Length: 190
Image 1 (cartoon, rainbow, N blue to C red):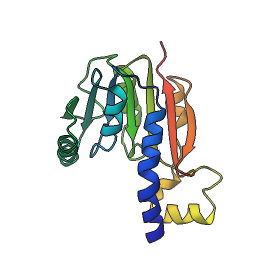
Image 2: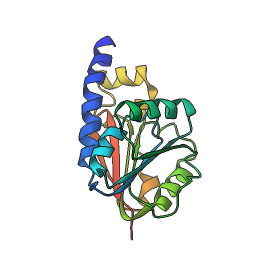
Image 3: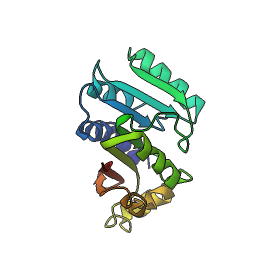
């Protein structure tokens, strides 16, 4: 378990950066970090949108938002609007964001359908939605590694809820971080 924890500390930050950098975010875009937690995505997203872009980030947890605010202050990142909000009732106008990114805890989010409806509402037509969470590639679930991961964290037994996304778009699923996480990515239809 110690080796697995060390490996995760090495793989996950690099994988997060690679995934975020692979989203077609352009300088000047407006991006939402959905359920930002401690704001780990914010420095990478800020580089993508540049000085002319804007970022919003929210979380239900005030503690997470305070940590995100400290991170932004330490890194001297100023073009992020942080606020406490509920994923089921986003405090943003419709069709505002060029991209919405949600990393982690989707598997634990109650009312996923309502949260997705809100994501679709606030994303511009043609904008990107990217959701990433734990879930082992089907071929890895019953391997010794897969059983060990599911024993340590049952959420690794989760599957991407493709039926939820299919009614809005043509989502693609990609297995990342050595098949330990799923990424669902799609453009909001016009």
